[in-house]
Image (cartoon, rainbow, N blue to C red; front, side, top):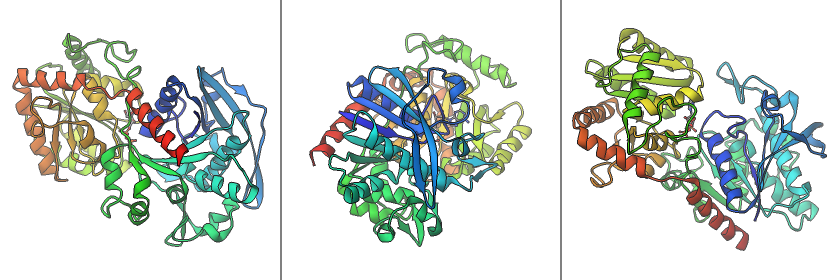
Length: 482
Ligand code: ADP
């Protein structure tokens, strides 16, 4: 099959969260399956310098954006057989210090930036030397693509137009803009209806994808069910229920080439299920690095997050407050909002021998924390898939998760199956419930044989991309047949 993917972030070129991991890994896994794969993404600051293998594509973009035309260039990068990245160069839009925001505020021209990206995807789908059978777009930034394709097919007789698939990585980010910006699409107002892109008089990019894609996926089965409910539907549950037959939940995979404990440039002391001794050495090294008392016997809890409400920051702070009088340490790596940073900083100041916090985005430290910790906290309000709990399992770090979305699909609690238990789950969204789980973790830590049972179970679980890519392939086949 010939598949064109599109995502506003792709690891290792750009990343703010799990979307980037998923897009990069899906592209590779589909190419390994033997498909012909392209992936369209912006050329952000620094990519040209870091990846000198980029080649200029002989196709200039000149796309209408409301009343003006915007020019762009396309660069390609071939990293493996069957996979080409198409990076859209538009310096005014994409050469910025960060992807979507400055000082916690969205860039004021995000509508222009991502309507342009969506148009570039459609231009390539139509004019590349190879014609994709299917265009698979990810999240709101390219949510308009299915609508653009459908519209072009209708008005210009694009006979062999590709079929389309939209993956929702997080329904709470929809790309909603004032209706005055709808003309940026250059589409007729016929689509600006409650069944189309209109959302309470505003213009909603993700909704365009939900309404017009041939198929919709989410990144875990449980989240696919949750988004059709009022509680998790973010105002789109009605539309999603009407499209229920076209929604599939496919659990993300893990890129074990990158997230492993045996061949990993970020992990100083490799370890495996046969020999855990390296894990303790990593723990001692991290305690030293973060100025915590160096003691292998103290249970170490970790958390790596974008600091946003979704991740359960409030109940995490509350639970730690309750538990920190006990014998434990906690480390946090977080990127995001200042008020949340303040909460953690305050905790670290009051418990300097128990809490260490680092702010910013640091891939290497993320690996070191996963490798060093005994337990990993993910008390999310909602979690479309979540990757860190899966990384934790492979790293022999026991995840403590709330029962929601992909967290529920990937972690097994002792109450579900003692034989395969590999984590601790709690249901109620409260500090008290999380604190109770931390107490269970401390009890588990005091029973080395049971602790090892959990660790071995977790390390044996396989979320590799091959299974995920096969599920997408089966879905693509179904889309092409209908
Ligand atoms: P989300 O996409 O909602 O941010 P996921 O769990 O799906 O959550 O993916 C988060 C990804 O981003 C993981 O690879 C995680 O390790 C990484 N990550 C999040 N915050 C940081 C940070 N501050 N530094 C390094 N990596 C981070």
